[in-house]
Amino acid sequence: MSGSRDAILGAIRNNHIQGEHPRPAVPLFDQAAPADLKVLFQKSLERMGGKMLIPDAADPMAPVRQAIVKPGPVVSCVPEFEGDMKITPQTKPTDIAPVEYAVLRAAFGVAETGSLCFTEKQLHVNTTGFLPQHLIVLLDPAQIVYNLHNAYQRPEWLQAHYAVFQSGPSATADIEGVLVHGAQGVRSLSVLLQP
Image (cartoon, rainbow, N blue to C red; front, side):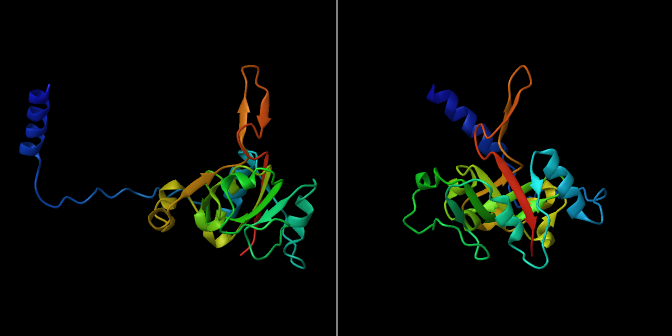
């Protein structure tokens, strides 16, 4: 067995091409990008079961307060909105389980898929993106990219220890086509465009 292994590894070493070989350039496929990425992002988000909140110029956090319609703990990971549960360095991932609403800021959004990117910087505790019943997400409209090709060029993928895309609420459907939201994660995901 080790003779075959040595022969295979030896063949790989002998046939390995030496020198620097740059990776091929991958196009970004931006030709179809619309001028206004916000419109495409909203359509994609809604197609995935998410909801856009309507901004309020007089009171920027009013849409967030209006979206909180059920009692229960609210955790906020943003300075713009104060929740009634604080995340501290001692917060364990399981401590997020009873949270009804989490208010987060996405690192960026992807217009083509309606996805939001979160890193450990936005989540504070990685389970904040999955254990609450409802997510309310602030998104800077200037941080919307066209597609996943552009998304993977973002620095978050090189600098963060943890990064995840979320597209709408969790959902599953059985053979009869009954769609259930929140089966494996959040039951609703709302986005407020806010710089």
